Amino acid sequence: MKGFLLSLQSEFYKSRKTLGFWASILLPFILILLVSIGFYTHVDKLSHGPGMMLWLLFSGAVLNIMGALLLPMYAIFIAYSVNSIEHKADTWKSLFSLPIAKWSVYSAKFLYAVILVFLTLLLFALFSIGFGDLLGVLKPGLKFLDYHMEWTLLQIYFKLFLSALGILSIQFLLSLLWTDFLKPMGIGFVCFIAGVISVGVNWDYAYIIPYAHPMLALKSMMGTHKRGTPPTQIVIDIFTHDVYVSLAVFAVVFVAGFFIVQKKSVK
Image (cartoon, rainbow, N blue to C red; front, side, top):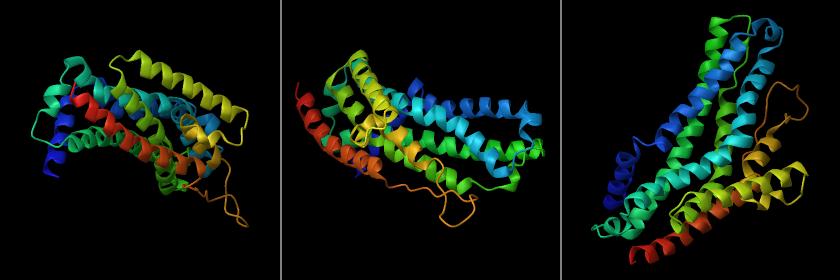
C-alpha cells in the first residue's frame, strides 16, 4: 500500500504542470462561464421561464456539449497524457526498476487517470450549481433560486463518470501499447464516430459500444419524471445497461493492462 501511495503521489507531481492536469480544472470552468455569460446577457428572453425550466436549459447547454461531444474525446486525451510522460522521457525501465511492485505502479497510474476524469465531472457539477445560483443572485429575474437541482446534477455527472470509465480504460490500454499519440487517438476517434452513429440510428445494442455510453447516459435521462406526479422532480436511473457494460469493460481492461505492463517492464 505504501508503494501504491508513493506512486500515486509521484503521478501528481509529474503531471501537475501538464496540459492534461490543468485541462481537468479549466475545461469545466471555461465552458460553464461561457454559458453563464450567455444567460446573463439574455435575461429578458429567459426571465419568463420557471426555475426548473431555467435549470434544465442552463445545465442542458453544458451537458449537450460535454456529455455528447467533449467527454469521450477528453477521456481519450487524459488516458494518453498520463502515460505520455513515460513515453516521451523513455522512463518505463527506470520506473519499474524502483523497489515498488509493478502492480502498485500500474494501479497508481490507472487510478490517477480515473481521478482526473472524476475531478473534471465533479467540477462540472459544482460549477453548474455555483454559477446557476450566482446568476439567480445577480439577476433575480432569472428564477434559479426558486428550484434546487443540486442533487440531480450530482447524480447526472456521476452517471456520466461511470459511463466514461469504459472509454478511459480502453484508451489507457492503447496508450500503453503505442508510444505515439496518433494511433490511440485515431482508433478512439473512429470508435467514437461508430458510437455516435449507433445512438443516432437508435440501434438496440448500442450499449455494447463503450464510446456510445456517455450519449446513451444522457439520452436515458431526458424527460424522465416520477409517475403519477407533476414534472417537478427529475428521476435519474444511474445503473442502466450502458453503465453496467462500462463498468465491466473497465474491470476487464484494467486486469489485461497489467499483463501488458509486465511485458513492457522487461524490454
